[in-house]
Length: 134
Length: 390
Ligand SMILES: [Zn+2]
View 1 (cartoon, rainbow over the protein chains, first blue to last red):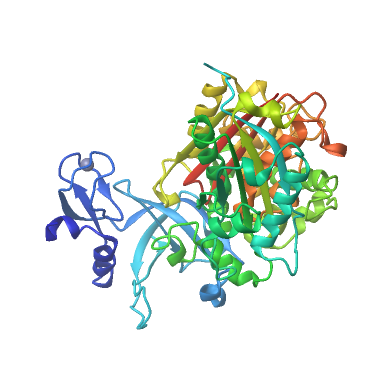
View 2: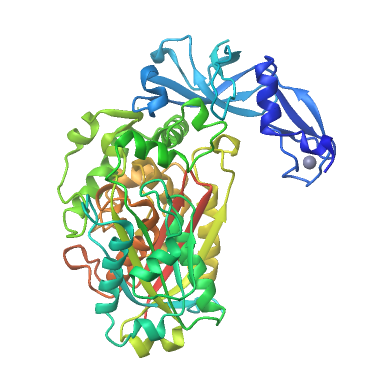
């Protein structure tokens, strides 16, 4: 396997996030933009991609406010999460912060914000991001 | 040929559902197997059963994998080929599909298919974490989205698009608790009021405690044979005449819409086509109500009503025990309980009882055609099976 075909991966996506870049893999054959990037296009089975920077703004498609949280997020509850459709159509889920919970509405414009990396020894060490009102 | 039986259920077993202290998964499965053997005196399990398929989701609960061989041994079937299937909450739905393949291919005359999960000995945060494994880890779990959270995202989308209400969702809970009150094997055998459901604490808005299914211990199984051999074992078989299964993206966010479950629609299409039937032919159904919104979406995906009308269907009582098409007569995942790996074949167990006139206080009069709808995770797997009284 060539280095190029193996590099369109979730690991590379998060490596870019740690450098405060939001990227996807664009299929050279059919043009589909993948988030996360993947080594095989699910539409046309091509293995050829180019990196593209994704727009950081979009609109909220749906959301929920989590009250019963897993151990790791318990101190943050209640917190909002939603699915955002970016301006180019790509969908990304994430937390919605920097707004009162009762101000969150379907259709509201949001923008992606990178968070500072936490230092842990455990897998995975993916950096985080969240959405805030645009 | 349409409507041709693919395989026939000649017996079925179900352990008690609930918090069953002191019994491990393998022992729960033995309880279900015991009932299936007792119901079918003409069956010699050691001689006749040629394979076991068993659904089981999580090895984390008991620090125990390798469920196929373990369950076969405890069911008294040592040395049969034993295969465990895992598709989150659809684990035994896909086991049933695999068992249908085994019988319909002609390779096996008689097989056992079932499922098991032992959950209640672990703390709620632990169970929450284990169940979350059914969803995408890098983009959903990692960003704090819980399993109820995914269905809450569907509920918000459904409310926004169709005007579905929290009250309509609560009506599903009230109906299923009523049905559960009539089922001696259900975990929750008590009725609840609409007010109780609506005022219960929020888990993931708009879903509240009474919108969520239960954490349950339990096991279920069926004995399947070739249709032409069914009368050897029972005078009252139930034929499987449609068997559909489909998959979808593991990440819910990648799907085109959040107001329906595409894998379930595809599985239903396959099953209806095989059976040569339409939604209006169904007399009784067990659907995957892991959350109340999931039952509303199931009505729409199965064609019991048009998209967006599921909430009203619940409100009008059309799916109540005495309604036009009774749904979740067992109490569903909501009240009977949801030992995730056992759920798919537990749904088939209820349909087996209904179509053989053994459902006692919750019997649907003259039920001839039944359906089960089993969903894994937020919909990355779904199976739909259609049954006809033999
Ligand atoms: Zn492509």
